[in-house]
Image (tube, rainbow, N blue to C red; front, top):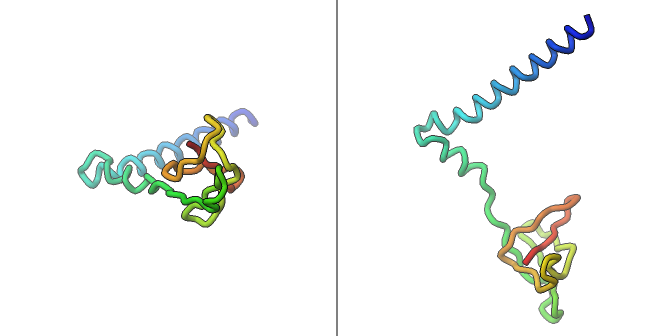
Length: 98
């Protein structure tokens, strides 16, 4: 009996996931644009940063949300951070890249 109830729970979860996917995919199709409107709503604007301390050779960046980058140099090339590159958030803190 325990196996049957586990199977029924899995089937219920699959059914809920299928309905959720149908709703999400149907949002753009209902508009008649093949889903382009739904994709535009999902895309986030690029977070532009600005340098905090210009006197340093490798200054940190402050982003639109008011958080300052954890690093002062690019982890890839070890050069100055690029303010046009969006940060990656690690434990809620921004990490800048080049």
